[in-house]
Image (cartoon, rainbow, N blue to C red; front, top):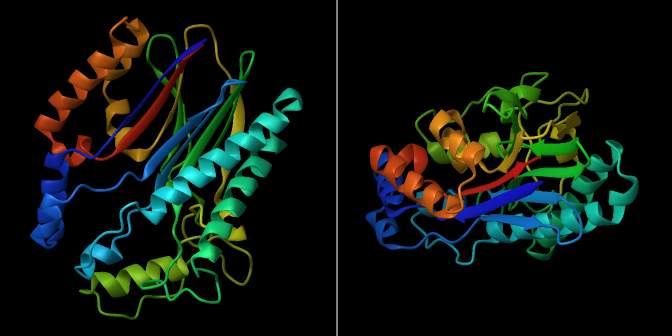
Length: 297
């Protein structure tokens, strides 16, 4: 088994495209967006964790300076570090039930950070004071068995040795079981629509215990209801990837997956070259901050 990891920041071309598409103040064109992706790789065992801090859109919408370092990036880091610590402690006797406990530990660590910053269920107003959050994905390898977990749009993917996609962890909104309350605010107000979403859909659960939206790591116990997890076998030569959503579009390109099938000595340079070319073609699709761990069995 061997692996490759890369974390690439958002490109300036992406920032320009995002700011103009979103109608944000042009001051954001000239600021470096802080790191909000994070990943950890165990030095003891084949354990891999990625997380993506959820962008704090209330800052640019209200034309406020974006915090640097980003508290959402801190949540991503805290989750990865705690999840890795918990996974290492459980590795020798690992089974599928451990995955939930690993995410529980990481989620609780994120909740402690939020509470230390005055963000609890009792204090949040879902805008000026809101939870810092992250998406996350995890893989542990034991022989040919792959144990995985994911929440929202950080993913685990499995390709056979020919590059054919065999498995992708679920999308954010695939867990919805019931409708959330109707939105009654101004349909033209991005702020009002966002507050509605964060209050009713993010880690949303109704009075019957049914899921009404999507899950992210915030420290709320409801987040674990949105955890997807399982295991599968990987044959020799198969590829298993753990990634944040910035690399999602890349995974649809056979020529990108082919780089890992070949695994050249200059793989890192090849990945960087590939990224530059794709960003030039479509910065909005390919230029977002992105993290990828690729494991070849």
